[in-house]
Image: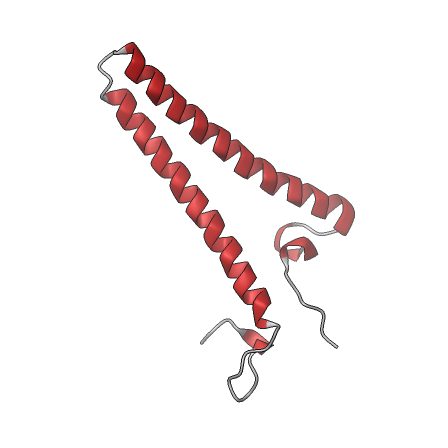
Length: 108
């Protein structure tokens, strides 16, 4: 079973409504990729710190990696929270019930 819903005609021809599904999937994959990159940055920073053996320049490099990973995480979390706040205050929804997170192409 696919999740294309009603965007495909009975003959199997995709319509313009399929862009909603494609755009939603791209956003989901971009978020997952970003979280994966952050996880790898934390792993690399930890490995650099463990293998620095007290060398000040290697410790600074590891701290820089950690700092960038934390800044990226805070930006990612902040953007999500800002969008949810906008949705809650101005659009009257929370989370998945918000129209801000549902990409719909208006039909006739």
